[in-house]
Length: 362
Image (tube, rainbow, N blue to C red; front, side, top):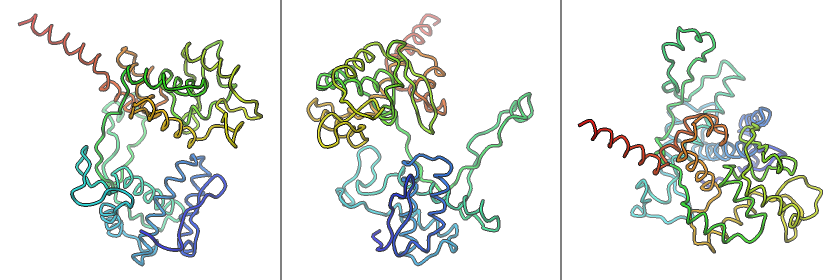
């Protein structure tokens, strides 16, 4: 979908549509500004912006204005997303992914659902601003069911009404997160040559931090003596995470012997090149892991795989789910529960013990 005169560019802390055709989509810029006012992260606003950019380009190609969008139009947009092809990838009807059998050059279900979520949010915003506007997004079933106690029990007065989920979605297979085994973790750490890179990887695999949380750490957020971290997670939610003793030693060595002199408070600083002394960026972090995946031979050594490895280790150790949720900074315990299925040693031990009890009773 290449439509001239419509693109997305940064606007301060937010994003906005620009170009000759942008005048017809002023509502989109109002919505993106609204997300910024609600303190949504720049990454979220950017993702929604690109999803709405694709929607507006499709509307322009179809000659449809925002005011003429109906449920039928949204279903046609969904069909267009399903048939859209991504340039630069292996193409052809016979080139398919092994994990789900879909074409390699097609949009993933997650990408399509992100676009549809952005469109749904746009029309919800419009309906909120103008009650006379009809929301064309079809509504689906409730996202949660209330139990009998929640409906009429002691806590019925504090229970929230179930929210209706949009039916405008693509079914997406929910797969278990990928982790690294012990030998892969060792191989990765052996390839790391600087104290900074070892500290970064250690915070992910031994403390469970996300890459964005690692990059957001200030020097004052690390209590090496008390072995605590103050972590700023998703949605600007702060949490305290215990600091592994070995990782604490690596961070201390990095601060004393390797961290460049800088006016920045960020913990991890660029050590070489024209940006020396500036905070390490997301692109710089990706480059570090890309380089070490190549020299270590651990192809799955992505930042989030290290965090998944930490979660799996907690599950195998039998840590309580509520404690795991607090350590990992998950908003919902259902996300934490996925790691229980990732603990093969723990699951196998419980399975063997149950089978042994069954045999003893027969």
